[in-house]
Image (cartoon, rainbow, N blue to C red; front, side, top):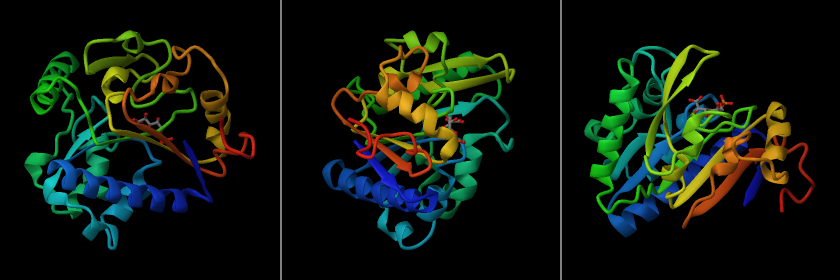
Length: 244
Ligand code: 6PG
């Protein structure tokens, strides 16, 4: 499913509305809302909107548990830290209990951080299936999503829910949910904005390339929804009807 919005502002409003709807539905059905946030810049306006009325009052924050799809292994006060961005733009401004915010803490040993986050998730999802109610994802121009990057061994992971990735170019370790974990979600929503993403979005949606070269193609929820929330810039190379 693809939904084309006029621009990033419209995309962000649609994402905030969807977030609030999914939160209310999850709490009504199961008494809690489990969401994994995306890093990067695209979701920032969505986070800002969720921190303000009318969306702030629409989300049952007291019953919301916040996780991340990935994290850069940098100090918690480093501006690249996804959890720091989300705290500044959203979580520090809404009444989500701090014990319900679960950042990936990997500024020391990525390997230990993987074990810790995997254990956290396995404790949360005791039934053995990490069924987030909502996973937000971005799309990199090279086809990565979360920290599932082309050519990395994490793309082959079939058991673990969390893995560490080393990006040699950036000299940076990252933690990421694996495709196995993401694909257990009830709903996965990609947020994609800007002309710069048009070529990769067409490749992801239109071409049948090997997912190892376009990891976003690994994201196929087993028993859940997949929505591409994109703006006209990103959709510029798609046929008028979106994607088939
Ligand atoms: C991260 C994200 C990453 C991001 C894409 C798109 O930590 O950077 O998880 O997967 O979503 O790189 O980033 P933009 O939204 O900034 O284009």
